[in-house]
Length: 95
Image (cartoon, rainbow, N blue to C red; front, side):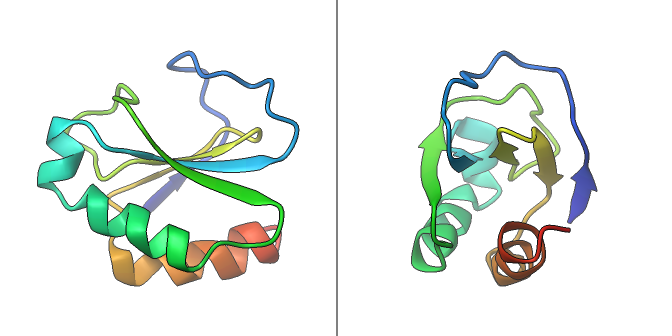
């Protein structure tokens, strides 16, 4: 899993006041297991964080892709077993 800070591509609605985790559910990411990644995030949701599937995030081939808003922090190649680490370190721990 690779973490990339503050990217400026693609356009995403940033009007959401609370934090949100978006997990790509488009074809390539789905083939790479994004449905299981989305399920793992929904099962481990942190307080004040919305988790949702989304369409293509424009990073095909690097998936499954996860985007944390409003900070625009990207995670690529996320596996279900790594979701708890993202929740603990990023969403709860602020890293």
